[in-house]
Image (cartoon, rainbow, N blue to C red; front, side, top):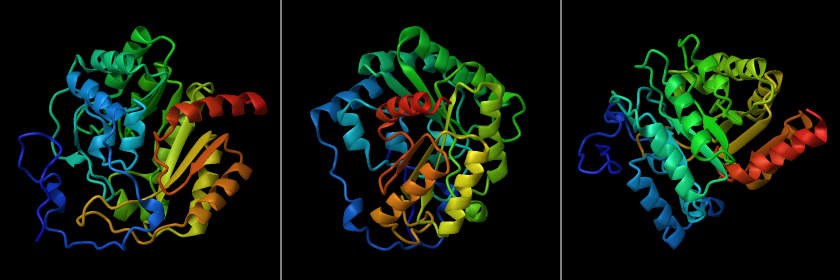
Length: 319
């Protein structure tokens, strides 16, 4: 039996995912050559890590084991994860620690704003763990963080990647009222895989969440993403595209699922680069302003560059 030990948080020896400890190992096929990435060891990476730690912040780059951390941190691009490092959900694909989170840090919004300033970010991405334990799901904390960044870095554009705020009435409206430039909420997978991959979420609730953002404020860009390689079929991916366009979502990301540990969902197959290119072409024909589809595509990867392209596409199409 393999015991998953928390190796991200210092001075803790506990199961990182207690609910997965007794599951049988799920074996994935070996990674193909196109998935390989270099280990992070540059000066830029070290500088970014220093600023993150000095401000007592958590990043999804570290917690989720993102394969692009070396590239992004070398450029001083980091995605801040607010409301702690412990999630109240237990999705089969995710490496973020699960359990009962602690209290919110009232100073965190200011710390995120200060780190954004020190890193010189022109575009910042803020995400969070799920906080089902909070009455508003953490919506007000998101709003406070957006406002703090605006005050400290008025020219920086802000992208948020939120949980689904399931059964948290009024939460979405609080976040949207803070006017992020991009509102991202990931579907993660096709609806047929939700029970296995994302059992705590509801596919059509997530679609409706994205649709509501546009109803509240049409000027906010909306964005969503899925992983492939979890057992989905091509026609299911194309249906997700249609569902997102029906909700007027602007930006779609598609990336390869990578198994964090043997206790997580297995990789059913590695989707080829040519297949990703095909998905991207089809998505553009369906009307998305921006599409990023590749094996190493992640929600925040090249977010700043993609935001500039998103703005240009809106102007070009008059939307």
